[in-house]
Amino acid sequence: MLATILIPIIIVFTLIILFTGIFTVKQQTSALIERFGKFRSISNSGLHFKVPIIDQIAGRINLKVQQLDVLVETKTKDDVFVKLKISVQFQVMKTNVYDAFYKLENPNDQITSYVFDVVRAEVPKMKLDDVFERKDDIANAVKRELNQAMQDYGYDIIKTLVTDIDPDAQVKSAMNRINAAEREKVAAEYVAEAERIKIVAKARAEAESKRLQGQGIADQRREIARGLEESVDVLNKVGINSQEASALIVVTQHYDTLQAIGEHTNSNLILLPNSPQAGSDMLNNMIASFTASNQIGEAMKKKNAENIYLQNKKKERRYRDPGTEE
Image 1 (tube, rainbow, N blue to C red):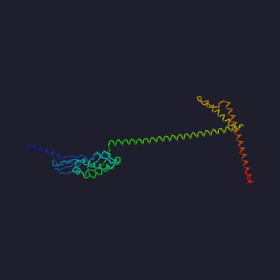
Image 2 (tube, rainbow, N blue to C red):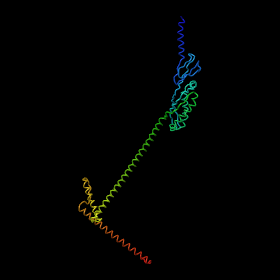
Image 3 (tube, one colour):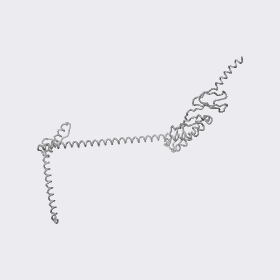
Image 4 (spheres, rainbow, N blue to C red):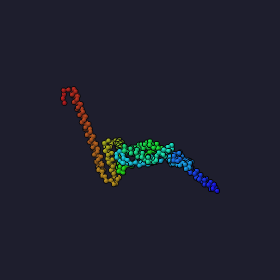
């Protein structure tokens, strides 16, 4: 009777003990097994068995890449207080799980201490502008120092980034004003350049317009002169000499102008003289003027010819008789 009661109890107790010895380890995780408080083995991902009661899981180590953000406040070479946000990506090396678990109590605190030490050693050597320009150098210096220190503890530093640089509020305000002034200066230069281009283009267009206008006027005058020449030739063929033809053409153009002005009823221009008698007088005066001009020209030609003749005679006498004086 007693055996009948004890056997099921023993079976249940045995099953409980066996089940407590079975455990699983997740992916990218390692479990450290201790026996009576002493390290025994490392179990990686999968299903495992440990001796119940005797073996214990001392801890589990995360093998994934982790990130730690460290905010460091320090002072630059030009005495500007600045806050830098350093992001450190690190990972426990699978071959050094023992060191990572047993040698280092708090890896985050250790990494933070090294970040503070490196940043406060590097940034005071730089001016504020250099901190912005050389943030990659700061990140590389932090990574180099961390790798040398943390590999002994089983940690691999994957990457270090300077993700934010925040100067003092007054300095930031001054920098914003400087940047705004610089942008306004650049904008003013662009506006001035655009205005200069517009002025140059306008001047070139006006010059080209005037050139074409002058060419048009020259062509017009050339055609007018050709027409006048043809008109004079026609009048010469009917017995009118060149002077009379020129005067007649001028009078004809005068009346053409009067007619053109008369077609514009709103014109206030008065062209004098404008009577038929005035036109006749104009023609007669022009013919008389041409005649007088011809007479004066002929007289001047005759006078010049006489002067040349007298000068030649004097030269001949001097040549024949060198002692003769004028």
